[in-house]
Length: 141
Image (cartoon, rainbow, N blue to C red; front, side, top):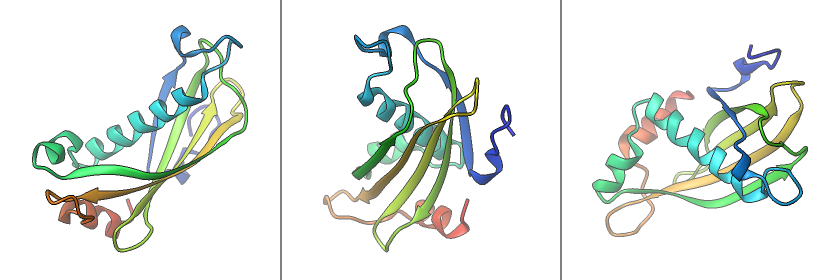
């Protein structure tokens, strides 16, 4: 449990904090910055489970986002510490989803809920899930 948040419901979590330059004129995190937070945690998760995102790209296999659903619940401001929780699931034979939540650590307030749908494109640009990624999805990690 990270500061009272039940992180056990997630396959992976990462703590971060808001930097001044990520805020807009209203003093809150710009909505596009949340996608950077989510992407960073997805890459960290994949690295954690032995999937090297950059090595796939060097081999001509590209993991891509095909849909992003973000529900903004509460804004973060400069200096706020937060945690991103992530769970990955198979959505279909060619798609997978990252379910990600962001909580502000000071009060455990939910900031954002996201569902990011992805696939892998092989060297010919066709959807194809690599074996290691298929095994990860099958394992339910």
